[in-house]
Image (cartoon, rainbow, N blue to C red; front, side):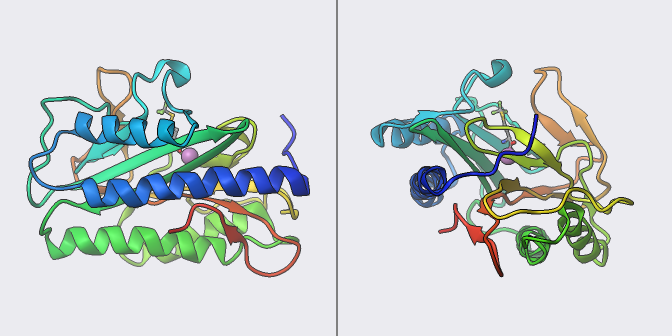
Amino acid sequence: MAVSIKSAREIELMRTSCKLLSEVFAELENFIRPGISTMDINNRGDELIRKQDCIPNFLHYQGYPASICVSVNDEVVHGIPKPDRILQEGDIVSLDAGLIYKGFHSDMARTFAVGEISEDARLLIERTKQSFFEGIKMAKAGNHLFDISNAIDAYISQFGYGIVRDLVGHGIGTHLHEDPQVPNFAQKRRGLKLCAGMTLAVEPMINQGTGDVDWLDDDWTVVSADNSLSAHYENTILITPSGEPEILTLY
Ligand code: MF3
Ligand code: CO
């Protein structure tokens, strides 16, 4: 699949799709507290997406059974919401979701604290977020794709964390996953040249221990192999004609 370059009209639709998704996340962040289940989060998120006349794009994607991926503590991504998985004070919870607005997909993820969390957990969340911002400093027309990957890796490596290598970011547009893949770890090649009008989901997944992951028997939930805490931070961004990228899902 060729990398799609969005027209002005398509960019406007991407902006709206992403803005609506950001609003869902702002509501979900307020909803997080000890005592709710991961299914409560899914149901709330699904309702918020549909209230905006949008479609949750994760639901039934390659058979995924829910609208919001809810991953707790050592779960990296793609946790399946369950009514009996209750959030406890001190947990960290990663929400990953997207929606379709007039045929255009958005995708974002955040890791939130449940009540008071440890200083180590707080630092993991904060540095995972910062690695995204270090990466996208390089997301400029004329730079190369893997400049983003290298910058994320260089920033994270100083902390001794593990970067998840089995899952990567991606292009996004009329499909949830488009070319190119966007790795979060250093690459030997430069990758393609970035052009204005490309929209990318950049999404570092960072473990407190090693970056190795396993898949649970549910076929979806990805966990850190050493069961260390894991954080995720993702936005859909637009490569602009000059200077900084536009973060379409920021709130
Ligand atoms: N959130 C993943 C991504 O960021 C996609 C999840 S698809 C699902 O690319 F099926 F697991 F929901
Ligand atoms: Co994504």
